[in-house]
Image (cartoon, rainbow, N blue to C red; front, side):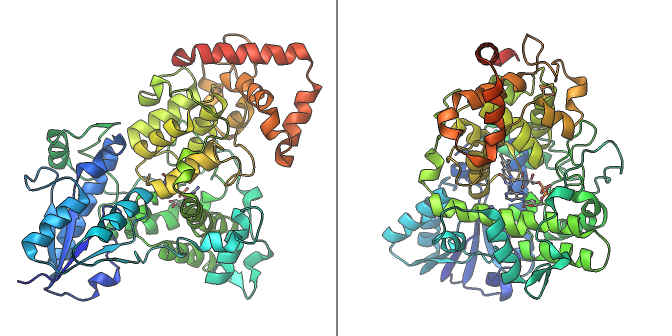
Length: 510
Ligand code: FAD
Ligand code: SF4
């Protein structure tokens, strides 16, 4: 059989709906590869490596079953050169192919690598759209070209109008664009967390191959009982179950945290979305339809749709507008390394022990755990934002740089100086206590500010604002914190500074 075209499919391009697959053509060879280049650019959670490889293998199987020609290089294949361009070049020579095609990569690293390689190649390398997102890479930058400040809400409203989502003509359904103020309830045990109906998979054989190949990882592999969607059918089923059981309460408890329920009413769809098993459009349509048929309240549907139509597309726009410089930002010049308990969860701070422990156990934490527990502590404690970014990029099942980096460096660590977030997302124990049950079982006293038993968040919080006066005091969104600081006498401020220093001195044993 003659191969004229080699078509590369990356591990986060598992989109069976792509127009590439609408015809079966004998001269097209689809190539998947499990390469050290991709397992080793950061230390990954074991479940992330397993889930991506398992889903790649499954998509290759489905394509073959549809009659497409597939070449699959496993991690232990002796012919695997463990570099994407080198493997493609070898295959081009073996197959005498005349053309290489690849889908637009979402990560800067891969985009650069494939672009530069294609410029030197002897045959054409052609990039095509991945047909996944609702916006182009540069649409957000175009929208904000003539404006001083990037603002997600502005972008989101344009997306609602452009895609006619939850709209009545030019007006938002229900008269409001945003129901965020309804979406801030703590969860006290009712309604019950939906049952986890995701199917179980045994990936023991794959995990053995990964370990035998020498790939390093961290976190609990759960190789015998993996629940991450393996294919589009499972992802669609997961979406249906979420719409029926999770979405009705999603809005109310979107920001809640609990030691008794790690998923709460979140969809856990980020993995299926980010590897492109599901399209954002179909997820949005299903949520909108659930509202129109009276199955979910408007606040829940709108809150969920905003995450996908708003935040997800907007974050991608920020990434492409500012890379590669964005990855080097460090507005506060924070340099402290991560404490060792980021890799064990063993800290006496109950909130961090739970949020990190869950991340290591499940390769997942929901947004508020990522932002207001782990990210909050990291920023208050002055951890190096680049080290924080690498941890997030490694630990979460859904972490691909285009979405993880702006969320971590921008939204969570304010390392971009306020390009993405209008204020640093930090809090004392009061917020964590309001939104969770973490403080009840904690070694530390949520109300105390000074002393060995005082919650570390409290002194770190005031110390953070005090030491960053020059950089933050003019920000209107945090005027309140500075007005409170102004009311404190010199002794109170000196006490906070000393307490914060003591906390940092014993950060490894907190
Ligand atoms: P749900 O709560 O059910 O939300 C539905 C969907 O909305 C998600 O699946 C996701 O696709 C989208 N979404 C929600 N918030 C965001 C956001 N801020 N940015 C982009 N998409 C969003 N999300 C990732 O997909 N990958 C990451 O690597 C990632 N890193 C993050 C790091 C930090 C510091 C923070 C604060 C957030 C990060 N997020 C990331 C966003 C968010 O936390 C996850 O998308 C969400 O927790 C995934 O779980 P879920 O599918 O149950 O989401
Ligand atoms: Fe976290 Fe402080 Fe509450 Fe303990 S008291 S759980 S450290 S916020």
